[in-house]
Image (cartoon, rainbow over all chains, first blue to last red; front, side, top):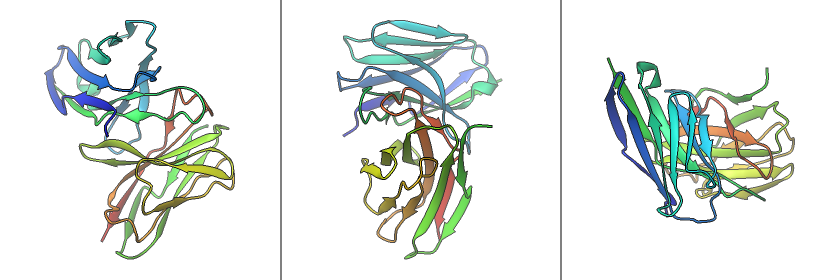
Length: 113
Length: 113
């Protein structure tokens, strides 16, 4: 049972364009939604995260949009750069005792020149 | 220099052999996790531990075993019972009961030959 669904599986964007990755979740008890960035051969690293009490969070070129009623959230990368080429994972967490992250299946982003 | 160290980076195993992957952290985190990463399937949780001498099965624990004798260390043994062990294995740690940021190691790529 996949509790966090992520799309698309892969994405090609031109330099300067906007990259958009979408995720949907099922468990309404989730209360923390991070995005992780992973470069080839490396472990994932936290990029940006949001809690459901806000609809949007922006950090530099990265923005999370959150729709609680639709149980969806998305990552927008503005002015995409070749250095953004990586795999992006959305995740969801129910904070509290024995909390553990549930990850989406990942999106491989390639930013072309 | 705080972080999580996984070793070795590459590991080859013959069919029928057990093999142990090392994970050490000096972040003073109570919680540690093992994930398996396969193409198109995201990160799947194998085992996790919230405290020394205690651990719980994740979503895909069959064919794996762990121990948590020290706070800093959480080794994973891939046993001969694991039918498809070739994968990229990631260790992570976080503050207990929060896990709002999981810190990942660089991963171990295991190949069965």
